[in-house]
Length: 133
Image (cartoon, rainbow, N blue to C red; front, top):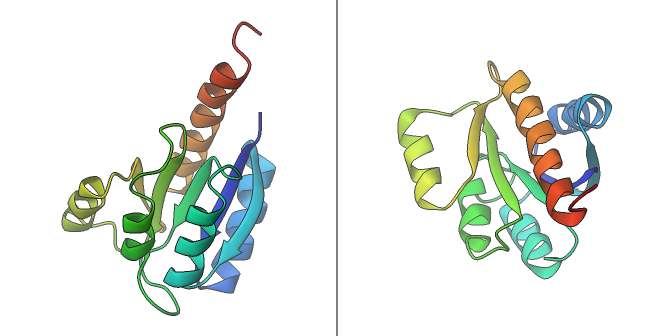
C-alpha cells in the first residue's frame, strides 16, 4: 500500500530528488509539497484525511519545520511525521521527540534509513487498513 506523503522542503532540488527517489524505491505517493511553515501547517491540519506521512525539513523559506511539527502534534495516531534535515543533532532529535515526531533522519547520512522507515510504515499501514490480507 502506498503511503500518501506530504513533503515540507524549501530546496527545490532536494525536494524533487527526494520525491523521485521515494516514489521509485518506497511505497510512496506524493500528495503535496510546501516550502514554508505556514503553508505546510495549514495543509496538513486542513487535510487530515489525505495524508499518512509528512516529511519535514527544519529550515524553510519562511518559518521553521518545528512550527509545522507543533501544528500537527494532535494528528491521528496512524499518521507519521518525520524530520529530514542536515541538522539532526542530539538537541534537535530531543526537541523533535518532545513534539511527537516519529523519527529524525540526517539528509547527508540517513537516506537509506528513511527509505527503510517508509517501507516498514507502509507495511504497518497496509495491515491496519487491510487486516487479514
